[in-house]
Length: 275
Image (cartoon, rainbow, N blue to C red; front, side):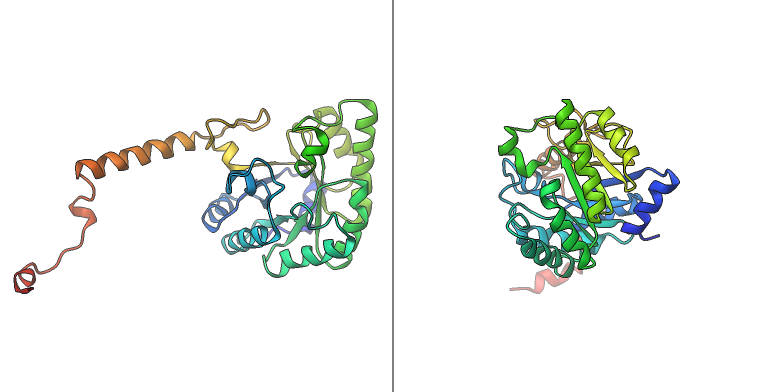
């Protein structure tokens, strides 16, 4: 069954937990989709995990459209949500609607996600009026890493916690169908989840959310130098890949690959006739 923004809301009403993973290419999207994951987030995290940037700020609309289109071709049942990159919506409500439309029309996304609280509610309203489903994102918002002074947990104090709760309510009122809660204390995430009618998708926000999202490279341990506290490693794919690459290299050096079963035959008497 195809997942949509409507089925997300229905899942919360039924108490069904939602699963979301990132993907940035056709092959990975196909595997994630076949595993039955409810939604695929084409995150601007691609700047860090696919393009090697230190943060997400350098990701462009062209980057997002390119990767989203590839993911959309591989996902048949998962809801494909595309991140709106830095400065694609902050400049004006008009730009927000225009760029959200590009992600839908050119990238074939089925929803968009943008970071921020009260300051982006007018943008959310306008995008929703254009018949584009919107997912909010509050707490730690990576595009604001410079303003935050780094990647830090948000909402620990009373004032900060109340602000995030207010932002969640405002995002729901603006028309978003879901909201990502990133790096906020578990108790605050649970309070927000019970205070709003749209699904909360947690990343570093505890089990009280309506669903969870992870960067697939984190949960597959594909980086030996990057292991976020909130990301459980479900498989050691990174080490398996490196081992396979090393074995391949050695077999090429030894001349044991390719073996007979990897080659194609012909009538070798033809070779003698060649000049």
